[in-house]
Length: 342
Picture 1 (cartoon, rainbow, N blue to C red):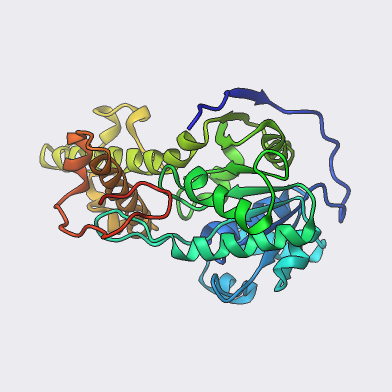
Picture 2: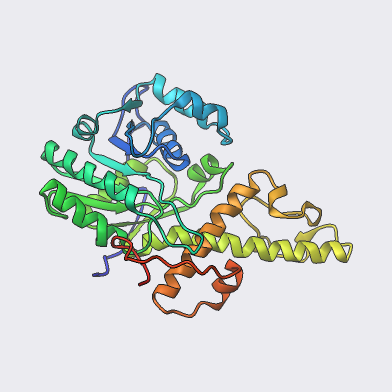
């Protein structure tokens, strides 16, 4: 795959503040996942009109049910406010939703096996349906891949499937953006709006400009680079947090044994996780607020990275060590365009 030219944009272009009830960009979103609800709320908060598409593959958007189990501060209120302003709608017709939007975000869940391999069957079904809807629309459309997919999936599986189903050509009739968002559970909204830099990959400049338009109001640097690097970014960022946390946890136990009350006296703040210091008395990850789920995401990313490295026959002793016990479970066929082992 050719390396895409990288370009940086700091505040892409001046954008007037949106009037209450007036949307800037029109996008649709597929995927009733925590990540999908987060992006619905944040894009609605930024003034864009977002349609959450429900289907048999990805489930049904139910804001009331989501609000009952949501642990993200502000998210429920943001979704309600966006709906009240007309910035958020829930659609059940994929063709109609795509027809009135300029871009579609794919937030489909990608299950991963214990060995780190990914099941792309659900995503494949959604991409085929999206391609057919793009054919009905008949004009340029941007597809924004938000799901955590193995490196190579976007250009190896998603792009060809879209070309086949839509009858169009990448770069002319549609563009693709890969937009990873490795935020922390329980702090996702704050981290979304406080990011200093956001890195994504795009198939071409026109597709990149669509994401620039969506994020123009964020006070952060937008960096567009290679699609393959953007796919890998989610896993590396989550895995890096796992490595830092486990090291910090070890140092915390050491401090406890030595009767040192403040771990900050022995570990620089830059080495800490974004959520702040874990005190020596805090114990394991499961005792932190949202810790079990967050560490689960990090472990998932670590095992996926280990799987990618093994598929490429690359030695990664640190990742192997931190990822934990070996799992003898290998898939029997290729994973639809992403990394897989035969």
